[in-house]
Image (cartoon, rainbow over the protein chains, first blue to last red):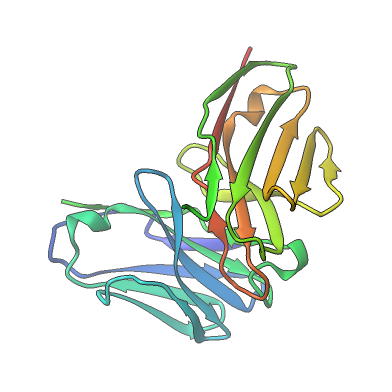
Length: 116
Length: 110
């Protein structure tokens, strides 16, 4: 059973397009996250939702908009894609708090976005 | 200064060897510490949490030094399957955010 799933796995698109990435977790976790991992391999937090409420909103362009219809889903919509948006985007989830006494976060398989 | 810094490596070691590496963190109030493992083109996976007194999980030993603000990971009796990038992860108290290092690459050769 997949714990954290993302679709699509690969996304190739032209500059200026709008695209969405979907994430679902079946772990019963309260908190979900979006991370960006660039070519230098740094994982940077973008957003986090706890029970559908936005709790982390890092400095990302407002072309990126997360949406959490329920606590098991967190989608990411990106408007007017730019070359610099090319990266791997990981969704993650965790129990009630980010670190929760050592439980850590569970990551989805990633979405590899390439903007041409 | 980056929040979490790691030696990128690579550490190339023969099977059966012991390899160890550190990571330093800048926020002295950090409270939770982890090592994650990331295989090529895969997602990060939690390897182990790091506790104040140090802890072991099989061939893996993690240590925390709060005074010098670093954590370490030691892998004994390396296996080919240990080849991966090891990410040092730190979280300040009461915060949902995890700060990731850029990773230390370990390659175990036959």
